[in-house]
Length: 112
Length: 112
Image (cartoon, rainbow over all chains, first blue to last red):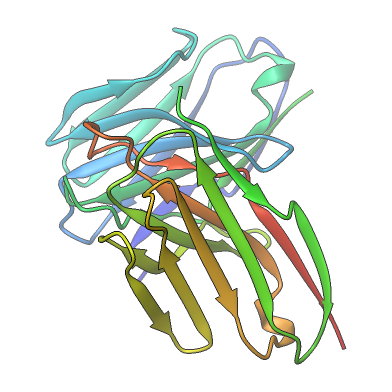
């Protein structure tokens, strides 16, 4: 049983396209996150949702729009993809105020 | 924003050697976490530290919460090939319990 699952694992797309990444957790956590890992492996938070409510929105272009239909799901939609969006995107979950995040295995996005 | 600097940036060691790495912050943290990321996977929590001066072990791993609360250390004893990966320190900046900031990472390579 995968605790935090992301799909797809790999995504190759052309500039200007719109794409979505899906994330689901079965841990009963109430908070979910999206992180971006760049080519230098630096991990930076993008968004955080607690009980379907957006609580963290870092300086991310508004082409990125997260959606949380319920506590167990947090999807990321990206419009008008650019070359610089190429990265690995990680979904994670936790119980609020507990430091231990559980991460998914990542989605490697390549924009060509 | 918060910056967590890790050193060394990378290490090449022989199997059986002990490893030490550290993480420093420009401000105080109340929680320190150490994660490991295997190639193609998301980070996995290794050790959590909640109190200044705390020393915690997890098998061959030992981590310490620095007295100043601005640093933390991770030691790996008798390294083995599966220790290969990137090690990240992380912590929630004061007042933001629901947002983890990650360090710059230490890449560990183990040779036989």
